[in-house]
Image 1 (tube, rainbow, N blue to C red):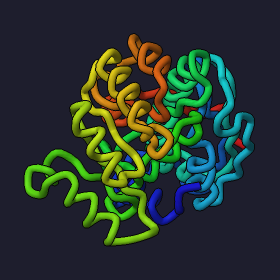
Image 2 (cartoon, rainbow, N blue to C red):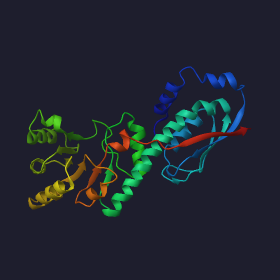
Image 3 (cartoon, one colour):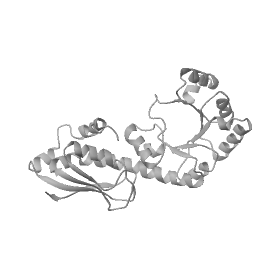
Image 4 (cartoon, helix red, strand yellow):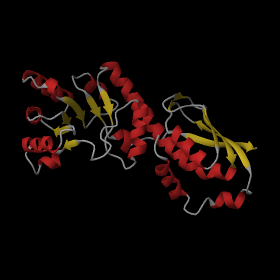
Length: 277
């Protein structure tokens, strides 16, 4: 689960001076019962995070659907009992977290199922295209995907802007010398550079913005040179739910997509007060 201190920052942003509406309208000390329900079908995520936030304010939480489970419209996810003001204080932050995480998890699960049906060995990964890394990376995992790098500190990924300053082979040599513990990945856009990267000792070669035909040609070239088994092949760029199966059918290892975090569609969840206790 994501740390409570991280989650509380979102709540602090939403309630810098408390919930003035509830404080003005709801008498102090009223206890209430509420439920959080799914308003659509999909994969639920963020349950543990919502639970932690409510429990921090002494709201009792009953979990009816756990992270990673399929839900249908109308399903109860959480049951809540506690101080009415506390429930309403946490409401929107908890729903926002669950909505975003469930949206990501639902989309990732769909993609993973499509890919596995074509090629069980290929993994679906996210990218760093998000400012909400703890939330988004955990949602990707819940959906069955790979989070990719969590930060710039996790692994070495040599991209085009690095190669604009340092030649490819030299960049890889420097990266390998820098640490024996860090994976070295290189982003390339041509067959020639893919061969150079593999020969220079890259652990992962990312084929960026290449068509399925170009990727197939590159993989065959790596095989001819006896290099295919020495590298993991990741493909990225221009991949969508509509064409992902074309890429999955190739002899590759990972498909990474930025849109699953930077263009996530929120999953609809709602909190409803059932009544007083």
